[in-house]
Length: 529
Image 1: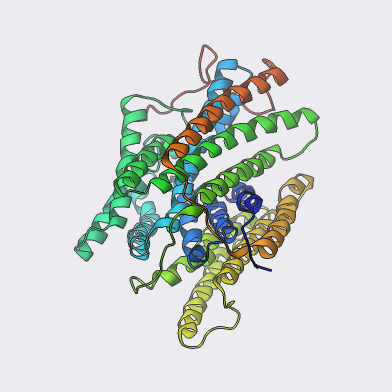
Image 2: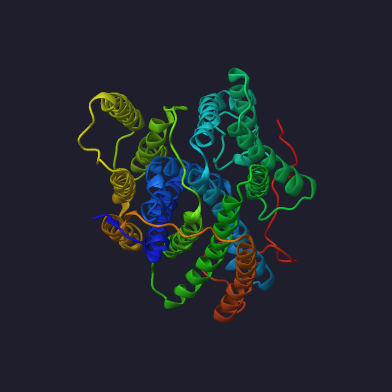
């Protein structure tokens, strides 16, 4: 039952942590950008439920939608070889690996936290301005998805595409990055602004992010030839530029509180990735045959979520945000649709391919692919959703709770149940003992999170004063020092536990020295036909 009391600080930190842990464990099965949207949306909604801020409750769907989008960006970063460096037994490569994991964790969490924090401080007009450029970008990505096979065929690479085993042969290969998406972000924003004959702050944010991506990408791998783990992708460089562009935008707009949340969650996320990887290696000393990679992912998600909880708790003292006005009311329906339809669809659509691969489903059902049948289901859900939304405007739907906190809880439970069931269905055809530490723990964790969210979410509470600028700088300085020191601690613990022994049975990955395994194939400096 929701209570009108002072919010529990432990809940404000723990609930996003557990929610993001669930989502990150599920993301490990679905992967990449679409998978990362799941933990981003869950953690953002969980933070709102624990906040005791009625004005945030009214915006809960906006938090979920933008939180999911913000965490998507980090899904482009490759880190498989970097984890291999930490397990190599080579001391220099191991230290380098932990430092890189800190960097990747920082970038991922910083972008996700910024997107999560924006609805907490922006006016309705500034908040809804973001959705037009975002939808324009998503729309042009859909066009790219359908047009790309024709481009590949034109260059004589039919069947070769992004993410394939032969992606280095792709005609648009450039350091195995999503440079086309960064370019299309600028194109779609320009088209959107031209059609409206207006350049708003949503367009500015997209431009800062896209131009920042290009600045980071062109500086590090292209001009300086700094590559984290060749021949793997260098989207980390673009994301570094995005964080830089984001911080410049926040400074220009006077959003210092969002900057604080971005840096706080980013630093904690950096510690989370490196420390969770170290803990995995320590756990492997037990000799038990478990899915340690999934344990690492869920541990990393827990720490990441705690970072979101801490960052959002800092924002509780910000002035109340108002939703008065009639600007872009369509976003009130677009935001929950993104949470309940778009994010699940982008992940669940991967399940039929997995079921076919495991022999649990025929490749054709009544002459149509299983994905086609699934697309028809989601099309039906979309049409039903539109109809119910229109109906609700004149005849309120009884299933919707009367309070915004209740609606937020319903949104959270619905999304959580959807992704947990979809994740279990994905693994069911090949379920074995190793899945106990994934699907089973994820399910129990989900039961705990729902219980906490429904039993302890406060409906309203007094807000603390905003932290002073001097104390914020001091806190970030201390946190930065602790975070950088954690990299050395993770390295030292791993060295003490294993010495020069390679850990695990994977391929040996060494970054530097005469035994270096990091090679570039092919030498990439620009797109090649």
